Length: 108
Image (tube, rainbow, N blue to C red; front, side, top):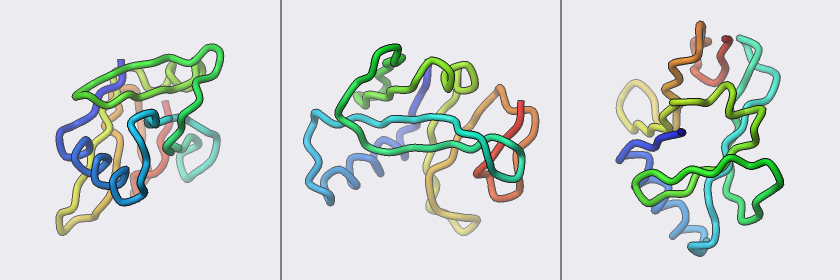
């Protein structure tokens, strides 16, 4: 399962509203090679499911990932912070053995 925090849910709702994106869109999360630690997160709005997609729903938000990425994202929570120590989405990933200082990449 992939989870979403309450602050992330509210920010996603706000972004969808600002962009005029309908309820048929969901959040696609994936893991790609790159970044300081070897693997990076990728996140975007999408409205087309692909064969092999893993589909989850948490707090009323639909989150979709491919099977390969799910191996790295299992039990991960998408969170959002707008505090003094940084603003933006970040992933709380229990599978990551190391993360870089910017929080954009990780290793397992």
